[in-house]
Image (cartoon, rainbow, N blue to C red; front, side, top):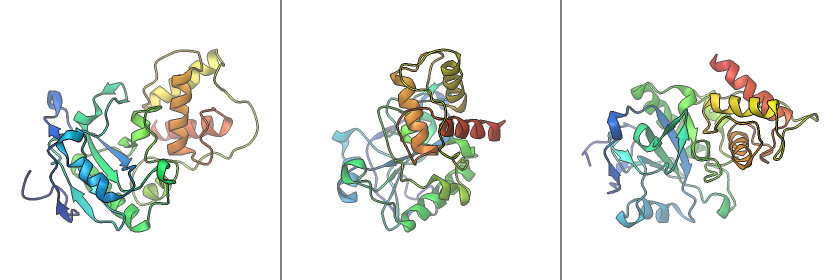
Length: 250
C-alpha cells in the first residue's frame, strides 16, 4: 500500500491484502456505503484485513469519526459482491467502498453517531470532488444488491448527508391511503413501476409482473428513500417519491 492516504481525512492506514486490478480500465464513478454488521468495530476491521476473508473496503469509519484507509483508491476492493447499477455489473471495479462501524440489524441497528456521520459525509464529499462523482452515484449496498444486502439500513440518515452536499434525495411523499402495487399483481402499471426503478438505476429487467425481484428492489428503494415503512409494497408514497427523484434528474 502507498505510504500516503488518498484522502487528507484519513487518520491512519490499515492495509488489507484483499484487492486487485480494476477491470477493463473502469473509472471510479460511484461510492457504495455499507455497515460492518459485526458486534464490534475491532472484529470487523480484523475480518476486512484477513486474507482468508476475501473481503475488504477502501475506507473504514469508526463510531467516533476516525477514518482508516485499507485499500488504495486505484485498486479494486472486494466490498460490493454480486451487484448491479445502471446496467453495470462488477461495481467493485468502478466504485469506492466505505464500511461504517455499526452492528447492523442483527445487533439492533443502533443510531449512527453524529461524529461518525459527519466523517462519512466529509469523506464522500472529498471522494466525489476528486473523482467527479455525481450525487446520484452515492449508493447503499442495498441499492446495488437488493434482496441480498440490506445495509446500511433504514436508520442511515441520507437526508442529513444530502443537506450537507452528499447524495441524491427528495423528502419522501406522505404516506396516505390509496391504490398499491404488490406481489402477485401484473399489468401495465407494474411494467411502468419496474421501468421507472430500472431508469433510476436498480437492476430490474423489463416485465409486467410484481415478482420477488420487484419486491426486493422496492424494499431497497424504500430503505434508502422512504424508510418510515419498508415492506416491498409500492404504495402511493413510494411511487410518488420515485417520480420526484426521476424528475430531479431530468
